[in-house]
Amino acid sequence: QVQLKETGPGLVQPTQTLSITCTVSGFSLTSYYMQWVRQTPGKGLEWMGFIRSGGSTEYNSEFKSRLSISRDTSKNQVFLKMNSLKTEDTGVYYCARDQGLPGTVLFDYWGQGVMVTVSS
Amino acid sequence: DIQMTQSPASLSASLGETVTIECRASEDIYNGLAWYQQKPGKSPQLLIYNANSLHTGVPSRFSGSGSGTQYSLKINSLQSEDVASYFCQQYYNYPLTFGSGTKLEIK
Image 1: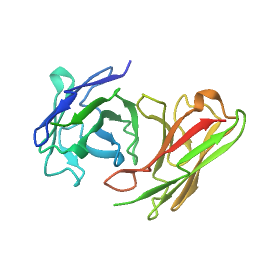
Image 2: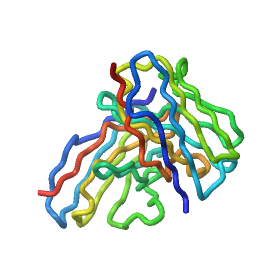
Image 3: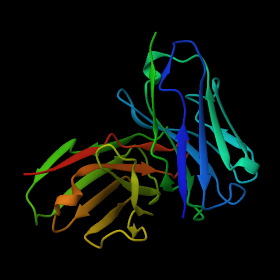
């Protein structure tokens, strides 16, 4: 069955870089877009960006200058890296699968999320 | 960016009641709208897409409607397992944006 699981550090210092890995099973990364969404106390749910089944990426301009999404299809993993972290980046980070229905961008499977606290 | 304004922020209703949650977009999103349910401590789950299509496995007491800039989620015959927060999401245009959520409780 389809499963997604994020792993990452619980605590990151301000100005440092956040790295999160999303490991998937039950489907191929070459068949689906993979999305990243975060949920923060200040802004709620925010779409961050995605990586297409072909490997190209798109980012929310809110994060564009400091966000990078990549993948390793051989390991069924998608990676999020965001630099220059601030305390406002504290929140839960989710990877989610894009269902792939034409004309839509829907998240049909989500990971359990990883809580990230930005603090010194 | 398209702003999604969701109301009410919180809602308390009795078992068996019908509740409605509203979502207003800052511009026409041409039915490019989804609703998600997020139970406490869990990740969001897709309920409705294309404003009124029920996602696979979602109980039929959930329904969506609307057009243009105004959309709503209705839950008939409220059950205890419906206690959750509900979010709308527009996918008509990037960046994808979400409503601020409605927290539903049982009276």
